Amino acid sequence: MMPGTITTDYPIQALIADRWSPFAFDDRRVSQDDLLALLEAARWSASAANEQPWTYFIATRDEPEGFARLLSCVEKVNLPWAKFAAVLMLGCARLTLEHSGQPYATAEHDLGLASANLVFEATARGLGVHQMIHIDRDRARQLYQIPEGVKPVAGLAIGYAGADGRLKEPFQKEDEVRRLRKPLESFVFSGSWSETASLVKNAKKAL
Image 1 (cartoon, helix red, strand yellow):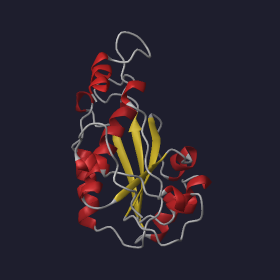
Image 2 (image 1 turned 90 degrees about the horizontal axis):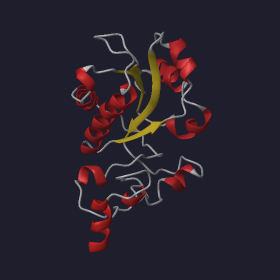
Image 3 (image 1 turned 120 degrees about the vertical axis):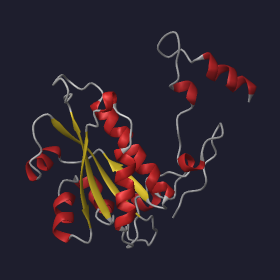
């Protein structure tokens, strides 16, 4: 079930407002063309000095052995819903700069930018993406021979959102709950920590 349309404080693009992270996925497969488009969107993301530190492992339900392998890197808390996704991915970040070998301070940030591109391309194509912090990074490193200096950061479950009742609570209920976000004044600062930026304060007064 798609959650109700959100109401934003200020107008934003529908592609952003419509994005959400479903728990329930139906049985439809994701086409090869769609998957390649998602990865192409990630490919064209911004990164520091164009270093492009991201790597993605991918497995689809059409490859049962590969899917089970990647699913085995998903921690127990996410298994009740992640196992129904059509596609699983694992996003990794290279933690050193290729051109100098120095620490890459924004590697995970830049992987996040690439994954955001992927997510919005998915949204435009009617797909849902649910990203996961709860993954077994040590197991992933072992199974996929991920080298030192590369960090498995997050899992991604991808597919068409569905509500066929296959999920138990609380996951089924989560898909029916309206999404909430912190207000701008709680995280947009100027001057000092926790001092709400005047841009936000003035706009709030005008509402």
